Length: 360
Image 1 (cartoon, rainbow, N blue to C red):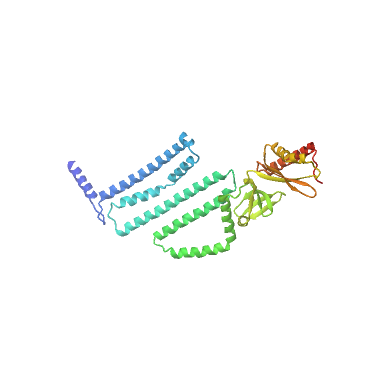
Image 2 (cartoon, rainbow, N blue to C red):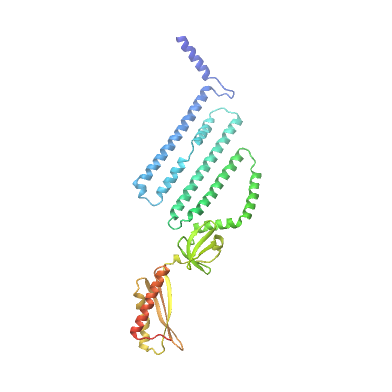
């Protein structure tokens, strides 16, 4: 029995010390493979623990009570960790432990090239995840003020994603020894041809992106474009649609819209109103002196109005003119008209009470 055990030990020792064509013993191969498997297992465990930790952080009161957006960044970080692929861990472990083996130059170069390809693809996946996170966060921030932003931001996300994967593909091909110079030149010529053929569409697309990001107006704003007035109903990829005050729908090209002067009345914090009051030439002096205070009192009766000035401005051949200015502290046009009507009625009533006649 002892002789059999010694024979088995001798065979095992002989097998473990056996060398391959490159000078690596079987024992070294076993150690390297074991190290690679352990390394992959450790990396996967780190990924799982990191994901669980980020999920717990999102659920804690500390995150809920922190400044707005902390939870979003944690969710974005969790998505990045989740999208880190197992094959990337395998390739990383193989590249690291490969340094402890004696390998031919061609095999070492192939292993390095494979590592670079894996790194480029994983970086593209991370970039895709960051783009998704940024677009989703932007849409979430703007959904209450501009529901149409999702359409434009979705198109921009598709353009960004295409750019990321195109760049990743070119890097991979270049690393594999493929001459991408001619390919890039072909893409450039083709891109110029496509851009010339679709320049109007691209112009409207970038104008749409400018509207969404710069926000000269949002859905529901009352705007004036040239001589057209209406409320913004929809902001699309190519056109913006406005409901005019007379009821019809106006359709503007986004590029043409940004070239125009846009008056956005929705951004007003208050509206200015001015009027001229012409009273009869026969009005006594003492009555004339009370008219500015009379106008001021009529304005100050309205809680949404702010008096600015009222003066005896001009003495004409047929009337004596008083100029008055006040502000309505509301951007709504209907509120503005209601306040103006109330002030006009109050001025007429007060003039009648004072016995002041308007010029004919």
